[in-house]
Image 1 (cartoon, rainbow over the protein chains, first blue to last red):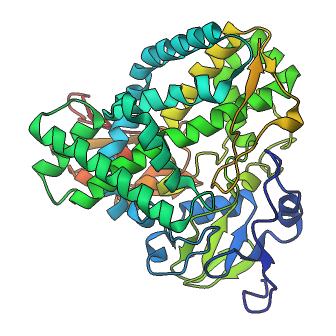
Image 2: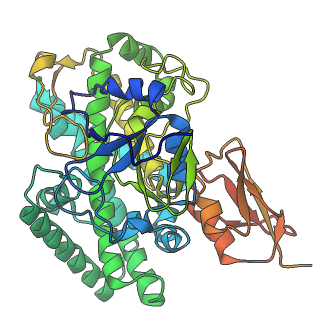
Length: 402
Length: 74
């Protein structure tokens, strides 16, 4: 058994600024030699960082690790403001009370019914992009409007308002790109905007997800408080598009810079579903491990004793490169027999929109590679502008030509 | 006894997220990292249908054993 938290020197975390989609090599070293290490983030208390697949899965999935216990603690984090509470600060069964209200809208079966409409939107956007002419920014013309339109239609949020709510949504994934004052202001605006849409539904019922949530709340006030209703809806709107908006250009960037893999997909588009999951494994979307789980009792994690009350961060991107689980983990391979990656997280907080994200990414990649057989970067790779000060890695622009 | 529910987990589909065991600990447990119903037939309980509704990969199926009708996920 290890020494415990008292004597180990804490490393500064994150391990330097993110470099495009490259994972810092220190993760690999830690997986081999020090799978649970002490880290100090720019803000909040010291924490453990887990880097191996089995350990990350344990802290995310084992009920002895709690998110609810983070409430009132000075959480380890990369940004000055403490995150929003809401579902991510709850444990089952309390967490289930909220999750079940929305989970039904995101089942694989429900998501499949959205596929034809998603294909239609994708094709329309590519028509527009062709009319605009080569080169074009894929982020602006395709990767942003596609998921935003889908989540708007699903929730019942007017697409015409996108400029406003997209700006405000940045508050949810910003670390330092916005000031704490701006974050408060944007969140306030986003919540007020959602409250307005909720008020409309109390006058006139709608059959969208927002309407269903308002109905659930009004039929039984114990199920959902008004504040939870607003926060949950705002969270769905923001998380429902920021992630896919960011991940889609990341995927296209990886494919354009791995032409053999792209050629493989073009030759056999039936590989696209496997490719989407492999890209979820391969692309480290987050800039740093976040949302520490707090041990509710003394627990052995690998060879290390984590004491009750201590926070542990799970490095998803590192777990996804663990060679004990994935052969040749640093290679992009669309033929893996099983791919139990943690790209959508794990445990009670496993991404509720995972099936929607998969479907959107599959549709988007298929439409894009079918439409443009000669798609390529329109600038040198070194000139691509990467976002800064966010919870996620992503491109500000992805200029392509065809 | 009539009116009971049949609970099944598709272990090939299950990713062992533990969401069901956290939501309905009296009915599900993780065995070898996969969900397993503690009993196949249970008295109706909302926590069981909640678990089926919330499973991220829809690996849980709750049915009426006499008619075979699906109770959850809906």
